[in-house]
Length: 317
Image (cartoon, rainbow, N blue to C red):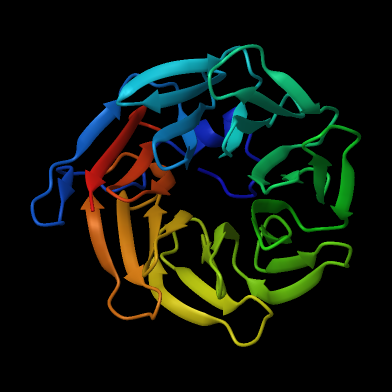
């Protein structure tokens, strides 16, 4: 996958022809079997979990899908390249990259509603109690809209390809991929409610997925395409010196957290890995995946999308 991070279908497909590890699909977690939750999906990308169900976007198929009790249910169709996805207690939210919209639908189904339209390359999405937040990669903006309705507002402008976003304690954190083609001036940003955007760290190589807990922000640097120079990083919520948790990653893409660990997908070498938040001992959990991308962790499973295989897969923790 090319990572100017302007994720149109042609760019995604252009990256599917090699450079990924081949060989047996294996788990290294005590021999735990790899379970396929859903097959024959059309380019599944991002993944979200509410602890009891999974939700994902089928980028080329134009679908938003839920897996409840192991059975896949299509919630929305005819979406124009759906990409990012988020969930709260009542609804599922997603972005349509080419359609330029932010959408939502009740978890029980129904008719999709438009939260925002006329956006330029909406990709990452996150929700908190009151707002829906998203990044506009093409426009270089970060925006939000109240769940109660109303017009969207830009909370950050002039960003260098904003990508993934997370909200914790009313504070938005996001990654900026950087300026194409080099993508060596990427950054991680912070914006408190009512404040101005603040740079937490700069000079990163194509930062991508992001997550946060009560103490720190975690993100992955995808690195140069195929270069094996990706990394998993953390920094205190208020900033300071970043910490490298794992180095030498090939295509680090998305990440998720539990109480003690950070999990991430390596798109280019076909692995799902884990490292303690304290930074000791990165380990590969799964090998031989065909372009792993989105990731979710719940109390019992680690689940990921494999977009070239067209599958949603998981292992027990």
